[in-house]
Amino acid sequence: MMRTAHTMIALVVNEGHALHHVHDRGYVESPARIAAILRGVSQTGLFSRLEPRRFSDRKVKEVHDPRFVNYLRRTCAAAEPGSSIYPYVIPIRNANRPPRDLSLRAGYYAIDTFTPLSRSAYHAARGAVSCALTAARSLLQGYRLAYALVRPPGHHAERRAFGGFCYFNSTAIAAHYLSAQGKVAVLDVDYHHGNGTQEIFYERSDVLTVSIHGHPRFAYPYFSGFADERGRGAGVGYNLNLPLPERVTGDEYRQALARALRRVERFHPEFLVVAFGLDPAKDDPTGSWSLQAEDFKANGRMIGSLQVPTLVVQEGGYRLRSLGTNARHFFQGLWHGFHGRRPGERVSSRRRQPECLPHVPPGRSSGASPCPHGAQP
Ligand code: ZN
Image 1 (cartoon, rainbow, N blue to C red):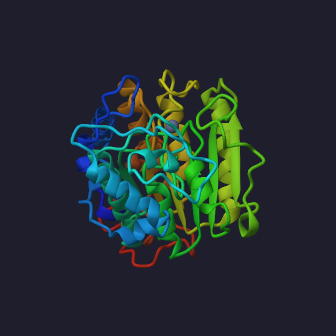
Image 2: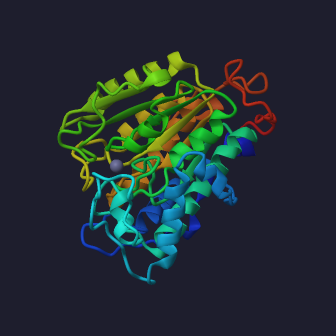
Image 3: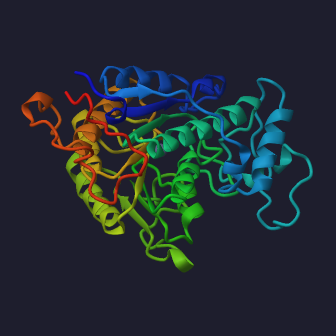
């Protein structure tokens, strides 16, 4: 089947990620994750790969505290090659006096004690940001769907804090970048609450944040993700948390997803950013739910059916054996949902599209979009 460039999903892969490899026991956020997902999605023929472009630190500092950004850069650069710096002291009581020593200061900027700083961590995290921004930019250039396949993940990174395997919040940086063009909804479907994304946009009404996750009484990050966290100031009503119980089936998940999508629809966003975790999957070592490939396909279809230009940014998901299959099913569902076809339905059985961009409701077009139907199958 032939598809034109802009009906395909723009794919941007963080190629420098593999340097970042924490060998400590139990650190499941490994380079093999990207390879597994890439193998899975490559089989679909739905993706058009774009080279990542480098974006300046200014884009990062519009979202993260510049002191935090500079601290990560300096500390990681000063780390001995191959060594890891873990938070050691957590100076929560005297915020005005961060420890002078760079490695001791790690606890000043950390939300947990298991995410290390290292030379490679900074470069990988910074590369992930550029990939997410490259993929976001592709939506402004005519793509309707884009995927930043990156690690390390980002959604636990707050304005001035790292943790949960995350350093810079690529999802939030991309959402902020797109928000210059219109309202953005962020939908976090990772098993763990996107505390960083919530915190970054907590007082804004132009970026809606919605998250479906394991309840913080039993799931990381334990301190946020409660249903009564609804936003602050101008942002009241623009954060929706849907914490779910420890055992969740695909059907139960879809009920929550339907509720989340109704909230997104009422917001009428110009762009949707999906913080895409694959850890709701059955047997994920960090989760407790039981979603399978067909569930991910159904979820993708539901999200695509919104027919809002959508950027998907990879977050968690750690069961190497099913990552590729589940990601493939999700994107097949997403593509078919967006383009108005049911998964598995033969494209040729549908009428040709009568006009340019018929699937995008008026007002949803991002402007500079060439007709994607020139070579409609
Ligand atoms: Zn997660």
